[in-house]
Image (tube, rainbow over all chains, first blue to last red; front, side, top):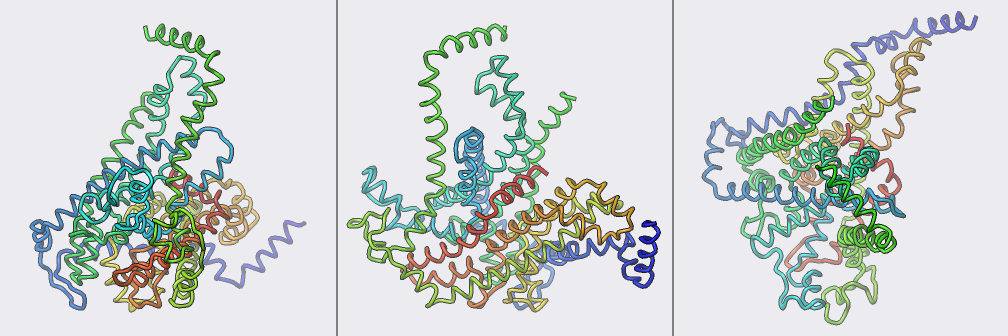
Length: 318
Length: 300
């Protein structure tokens, strides 16, 4: 009885509203559901990506539509020592910072994987550098790196008496480069540590028990169980990390703006300086586009280089 | 051969164990775990401590390490915060940032919920490819896009308007949220929806009455993640906003407060502290969601 009343009710409800029926028509519903996301992404992501590549081949400036100039922008960049500097520093910055982040982050993840009191609070605190707006923590680093009132200099000179003069963190090329890398590592450790910790927790303890029964040392357990089991997650986290370190902008822009003497420009900050601040949109776009091959290479390298072992291992296990 | 080595090693271990055990577990743990952990926490938190302590220091103490211990404040002051709130447009910047963050979060939550539902539950031919396409969008960094996007924004007449940011931020929020929500939708048993379908519910009713209520934790995770990401965004806000009043907090502090040769470190640090607090508070309320979404997205 209840069934008949229900269906008649449903019929009565359905009959007048063609709108409801339209929204229940699957193809229409799929289109409607995907429209906002796809629309936003194509207007503000795919289209600008294509436009950026087009702009790189024109001599557009702010306020003037450019004409197609072929490879001229790229030819100019190849003769531009500032661009080569930026490429060099971007690679160095990404290489050292990624290594530092993963070495320290992995270590921190292994430490956090032990049992001790207040673990969840500690885990929450450790993520803070990653939560707080990068520019604002970069300002704190700028203040820490101050030539006169740096707290690190104070520690080294007045407390520990290791040095006789203040450290000039941002005044010359190499110290400034390494100061920025240190700030980047500081910011990246939490993300790496927490992601890898999640991976560590998925490794079954029985594997370690079996290894311990076989008499494997702590190092062997790490080398032959932890590390291979972590490979897939390591590959993903590293791919992301490399992409976003290579294209980093905020830290450098906030702390040195590319100085001293343009020595700390990354490709992104150089693109901003030329494209937006200098108004040479075409040239800025060419610098931005020149990042793409590096990114593709880094992604393929880190993803397939690391993930391949996982496949091999998976095959031999199956 | 390796077996015998391992065995002897194990035997040696077992022999050594009783004498050293008590000493071992205590001191060893201290040296191997607590000491490095302490160093990590100290280094990771120090910049925040330094930021906080600087914002409450009077200028005299700030620049005089000889007479005042720089690690502590002898006479705290709220002059810097007062200056920030009453002599600059800081409240206005906070308000803009809040509007932009909430606007873009709402927009991307709606877009990505619908997209994730379509990809995971409406299952059509090619849905995995749409999912993959959205995921790839996440790999396109803003540094490549900001120059052409600036021209697009100018074409739309949105230059210098916070609305531009609300529309642009979803480009990096939608891919992330969609993937997070696909994972959540996957964990909801499909049978529930089938039952509802059999009972004559429409697809939209199912989404509203069954799937969404069950996916609330996922929605919260995606929401707070989006909120913090848009609060922290810098390069688009720097490139698309020109007038001082419309800037977001991170951009405004860097471009409006850094003036002249003598930096107002007290005010700068106070600004950074105040700008970080909303996210930090928000974060502390939802830590578990946050950690789970971060790790969940990585595992996907």
